Image: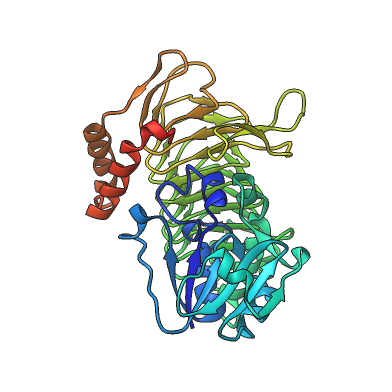
Length: 394
């Protein structure tokens, strides 16, 4: 089966800045990315139909028979069943939204409305990622689903350390090469997955559902609350709840982060804190790239969303419902602005200035070199495109 994940342009804008550097289908929610979920659930080849400037890195692979799937829809048992029954020319819809169709070419909305074979996916049978808070709101359920498929028929490597306290052991899965010392892991409220070669240091507390990705590190004394995902090679300490770290990002020291999403190759300095609840307990407004204004989320708990390659200096404070773009270097006293545009340098007290492209690339490569890697030509071109689009408020 050949799956091509396509995007609704409005949802793509709602999900910026996280989708400035990747397609929607490459976002991580739960243990896996959306692409990885489809690969695992349907044993399929999966690629992307996305923005032109991303297409070199995220290329589309097309055959004579393709399943085009809306990347904002996560795989559920019901949706999987409908897709497996799709005939050539068939379309799956949910209300007015196209969920999936089967054919040789990408079709327009007008062409899809003329399809003769239409199946309906009920909203109750779907889980979707259309706005930024949807990522952390769905994270717990997605950890449970991914855990079910990743661990099915497999045996956990187990926890040998005699000083680690475990609750709900049957809901804890440990891959090979994991190091755990004197920690507390409680999976009574949901599964805990610990990926290959991950490290859990002394005094750490992990509550399920949570996922610690391959080569990730949970620092000394960390408090990993429910619904947390640490992507591959992330290093996280302090107190974290209901939050996703995409991959290769650091929050190595104390400080609180909740109801948030941190992109790839980010760093939060010691004692960085992000509010996720207003003093008046009111609903939180969040900057929306589609409308270019603050929009109510309808949620009481909303933290910080940070694009790739951004950094926060020591003791940085983020307001409830903050959005930080790609390649930002944020520091200084006081609460930061609730919207910090991509390629910004500075802080609320000093003011924000444009971050020189050459300097930003130099810092990124210096960061990546510590893990023996560098920006690829494709990734540099993506950042160059984003920098060039500053006039469009990215």
